[in-house]
Image: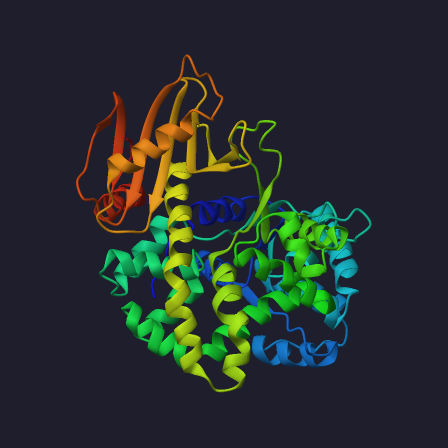
Length: 470
């Protein structure tokens, strides 16, 4: 499969490579996000470089012996001499899964510190690139003041998921023709390129083939993939972290709802939630776009589509797999997937508006209805603080949606949103698979109706960096 996106990161690496002296670059990101592939794309036309993968489960002696064979270099008995030799021999050195030196020989970091400092004093021309998949360990190695490599990096690149337009472009290229199926697959894999490469390698080009080949026949592969990523991060406490993430995947997004999975222990639930938000970056805390006294409570959501899907449809039904009851797994999937897809469609539309349209604030809005105990919710609220424009949006993963009915509901909810009420310019947006009819105005206010065909057009414009405007 060809290489997609990452132009910004490649330009950064090229710029650093043209610099003088010893340069130290860190590339971080989740497993499967494309760190190694991105560096190899950068190295494609380069000469005199060394690629070194650092295994987690090998001794220092075995690691050094195998590397000497792979690179056809002398065998070394300590990391200090090994590092010095390869840094002298090659102009570019790429150490992949760098955090694993923590298990092979943690003295690697202090040895590297001394050699990097020495090479910088001597003006040695070297580009050292290291990558790592463990969010917590990479942060510990480079961000803690007491660690040997603190302050030594010249550039840090964090690879995030591919943007929606790139993910949909990949799906089109590998044969997914139906718009509904493209969004359905994106709702499972998000912007993680490795999963799309797997679809490509298996020749999967429809959602039915995905269910049959990838989900039904390779359920164990999906189960192991999620476990491998998360257990490497969480260690011995993984069950508690799993509990939080599974609760969120099931729609339990408030602290007290998540605490119910910990025998209503709010402190315990809050501890693991805070770690997932601050240390691991797997969960995010969200607030209403416009806060009010009636909307104090925050909510939590899993950032990554794959983990959302994995906890709801894979890990949750692991016991069915162990019993060999694939039929029960598929029944559960067919029963709940459309509801899941509805939530992910909201995220899909949110990402398009947030990333590409001229609003200063975009998010979800909720709060209590005055003089009642009821709560109102608006799928997407977008503000332009300079022009005082406000957009109220609803996302419906349905066909033949009645836009007038939705606009009436949005108009009623808009009254609860206190923001420049006398000055603001209101408009409505509705996203759906299709409409019973499209309208352009409701009670004197602009209405934008986006069906799947319209969204496809927007994505194609975004892919070519053309402005997409309402």
